[in-house]
Structures are given as C-alpha cells and as structure tokens.
Length: 233
Image 1 (cartoon, rainbow, N blue to C red):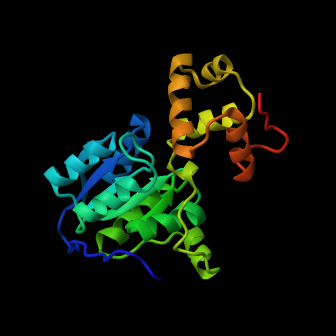
Image 2 (cartoon, rainbow, N blue to C red):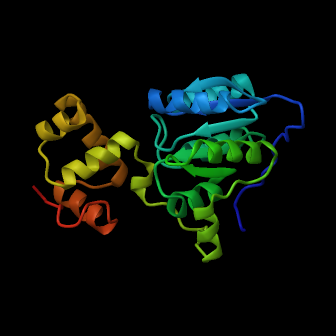
C-alpha cells in the first residue's frame, strides 16, 4: 500500500501503560471516547483536546502513544491536523474517528499519516480492537476500508472538501441546501440564528462556494441530500 509517510511508532510492550490523547470538538463525543478508552485494560487518557491547537500542545506536553482525533476541528481544515501531528510527532499512532465513510475519507487519512480510521458508528469493541492494533505499531483497517483497498481504491485521491467539515457544519450545509431558512435551521438544530450564519460562512469558505446555488450544486454533486429535497431557495 503506497503511502507518503514513514510510520515509526513507539511500540507498547506487554505490561506497559498506553497513554492516549482524545481530541474532538464535541464534548459529548469526547467524553464517550474517554469512557471507551478508560474501559480498555492497560490504556489511560492523559489529555483531552477540543481544537487543533490544543491537540498539538497536548501531544507535545503529554507524549501519548496514541492520539484519537476527529477531522475538521477548530484550527484545522480537513486532513491538516493529521498531517501536522504526523510531521511533529512521528512516534504517535494516529487513530482518526470521524462521521465520514471509511471507503472515502479513511483512505485519504491513511495516506496523510493516520495509523487507522474508524467511523463514529463503530461499536465499542471495534474501537478497542483498533486502539490495541495501532498501539502495537500496526495499522488498523476496518472491514469497510479493507474492502475498499481490495477493490483497488486510489490512495492518492484527496478527500472532497466537505469531509473536512465538522458534524455541525455538515448539518448546516445539508439544511441550507434543502432550502431551509436560517431561522428554520436554527430552530431545528437548537442554536441561535447568528450561530447558523457563522457556520454558513465557515461552510462557504471550506467548500470554496460563493452562493446558495453553488452550495446546492455541491450537495447534489456529492450526493449529500435525500432525493428530491434540493432547493436553491
């Protein structure tokens, strides 16, 4: 499998404690992952991070064996955090935990320097298997990712821009592309309309679109909408 990086982890030996950094900008998801790691014998969470800068600082300060990180965190777009962690901390095994499909973003993450990739729908036991695998200095390939590789997926392909969106940004993208007004979208997501405008600006910037029509076309092109629900509003 051709990759652009050389993986040189600190291999954790039997009986040693595996130090883990958990990075996700959603506190509830981060808390859930901390609980999963804590319930894995021999593993200990040494730091949590809610942004790219916090993750990089924690990696420098705590010297974890494994870093579990989301994509599209504040302070980094797309695969930027994976690449920066790999460059600055080549000894750390990186396990990406994201909402995107393994056969899409997972391949790009491996090429960028991740040791493994998990979809956020993964079962607790699969997460723990992935943790043990990358901590031992091996790459973790989920069944879906393995199937994609067997089918000859192109590792050189970059993930599309929307794979760098946070979960909330993706919700705003879909809502706007469906034709929801800002007030309607704010109500459905339980957030302030001003916050929707902030997310909208981030989405437009990350997807490099300028109008709502551009946004709808992007959503349709990448099959992000239920059939028949797109609207240029």
